[in-house]
Amino acid sequence: LTVLRELTDIIIKNPDISPSESLPDSDPSVFHKRYLKKMRDLGEGHFGKVTLYQYDPANDGTGERVAVKALKQENSQVLEGWMKEINILKSLYHSNIVKYKGCCTELGGQVVQLIMEYLPLGSLKEYLPKRKLGRPQCLMFAQQICQGMEYLHSKRYIHRDLAARNVLVENESLVKIGDFGLTKYIPEGDVYYRVREEGDSPVFWYALECLKEYKFSFESDVWSFGVTLYEILTRCVHRQSPQEKFREMQDTKEHMTVLGLIKLLEKQHRLPSPENCPHEVKILMEQCWAADPAQRPSFTTLIEKFEAIRH
Ligand code: ADP
Ligand code: MG
Image (cartoon, rainbow, N blue to C red; front, side):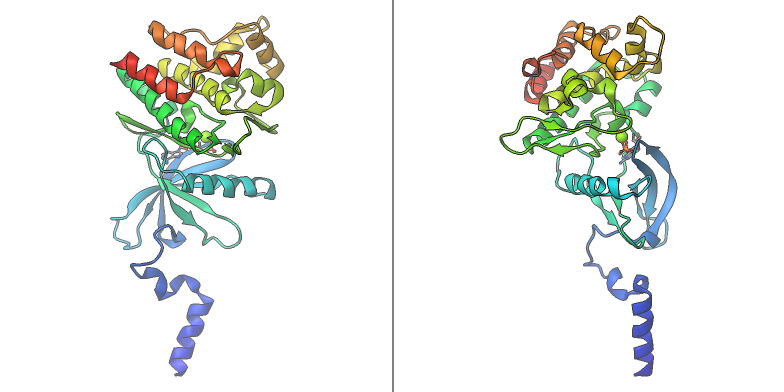
């Protein structure tokens, strides 16, 4: 009896060694910190940092590889948004959206890490400059992004950060949308979400009404898709990036300001047509950048257009 009591005491003091955790029927979305073996850093953006781990409960090197996203700094301001990001990803099931696998909460306190499937080829931004991707493949990727976005919009979410850096590559014929850090829900009946983000916003991907009035909508995601399409067709080459191209467009050599960008866009200036861009694709891209949001195509329309162009 004393031995049993001692054992119980040990388990209470060390919840990590509780035998119930290793039962086969335990929740597969609960990941235990001690089985996560770090392999390498995958990338980081403004708020998050993503790392490749092997999850190896058997401790024999056979465990699966997972991508783990954590907040760069945990302050109360970003914590609420972080929990929302996790819950949004958890609710999404689509072949062109990165899959949620679970959470790791064992770090004590409020810290939660998001466990996702690992996409071995990284984001389009890393993938594209390295390969000589043909046009058919580019257009296929573009259409897949539209498919993921059509699904997201059908659930009344707006992404707000669609860009090549946030599209992940599974293999040479499959891409998935990732990074739901800025995603917002648009309640039925509403048409936009008004937010003024502090700090760095992805302004070169923003529609005119986002820059001027902080109005984000399904249509402003379509504008960002147009910029993402531009990135794909320029193969994410740095000297042709949206930042560089907008900077070249202004008269002064100074650093580009949001006000400067608004002025350019109001004068109907847009990113140039990528080299060897087919005429129909150029037209589509320009429609995504219509000053009037109502004139922009929906993702459903874009999918039909890509189908027609590709076949
Ligand atoms: P942030 O919110 O900080 O921008 P992201 O979710 O965009 O974070 O991830 C940052 C980078 O990490 C991405 O641009 C990509 O290069 C890499 N990354 C993110 N998720 C994965 C994943 N599931 N598999 C492989 N690489 C990933
Ligand atoms: Mg990102």
